[in-house]
Length: 264
Image 1 (spheres, one colour):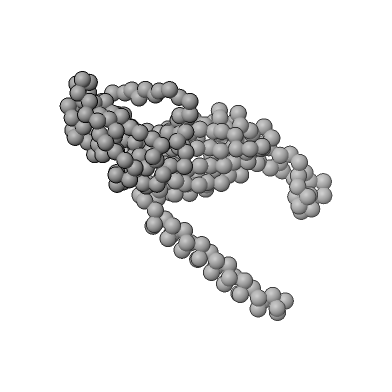
Image 2 (cartoon, rainbow, N blue to C red):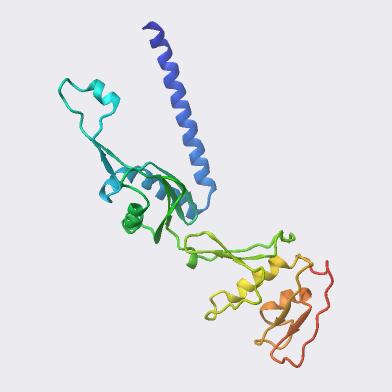
């Protein structure tokens, strides 16, 4: 008993030190991220600590009437242990646009049950939208979007590196903040349509900037909104174009270009 009393303060001190270290690491991570990610971290904390109550309210729980071995040991003779209410275990990972929740399924609480409860989870978590998809056997992944990626301005910085593949066109993020790519292999043409000011030119400029470092790609531009190559949306890209046409197709001033002329 004396040894236990001597060891107990050391163990308690070690536990408190680990808890303090964990808190410091969490605080540093919180301060280093951007404002939107901080909001998602706070949202993730609310989700984690309120999950058990919310899961029971949303019908994502199951009653286990079979007592555990420990419950049978501590129960009195002739007394039946109370049934347990089980909820799926979750792991929460925040990002700039919301949180990703991974959950383990239970008997009678699987993919379909989570999908039926998606709209309740969206309301409870104050999200723009929630999707539920399978994440392997017995698991689901719940994407809770707090900040809508479709209406959030984004910034693309070209690296100047030669692309490893010319078969795909990175379009950006979808409504769940997942990367979207368009396969380009054996595609004879692509039409980009939309209202003015909705990002058509920015999307094409991104494609040109990403593919420009490759000598295997050539660019010819016909821009009916301007008269010369040094005007309009593609003026900065003129040195990388081998041909340009403005509002008069009869006058097509060719732009000479050789590999290495265009500095990203």
